[in-house]
Length: 134
Image 1 (spheres, helix red, strand yellow):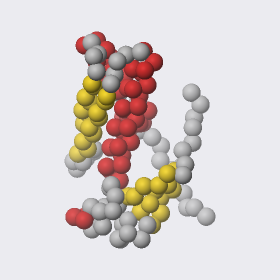
Image 2 (cartoon, one colour):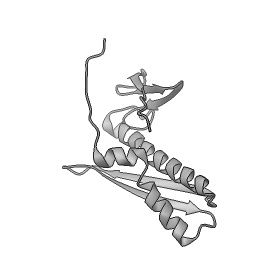
Image 3 (tube, one colour):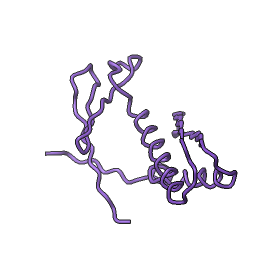
């Protein structure tokens, strides 16, 4: 599969000291810190968005696979929990699969969940390069 560039721009929103607006492909969403972190709580904080990215990618990957196989996945619920101890973070993913799937299908879908691109990127790391814009 060819590499695909994705661009998200994040800028001040004017909602509190840390309020931001993220934008991608014509979509916008708020980003902020909770009140206990000094923010205005006008939107999810960055690690919640990272959890949403992991959970969303997991659900989409599982749904695509089930559809390709013609399996009766009626609903998927992915809950992602992130804990940040002193040394490195830990994501825990709980997946509920609804529908008349047999045990082998359920096991396969759970295995496929770990193949989502966001999961792979977080598990194996990505290069991060910071530059000055403009």
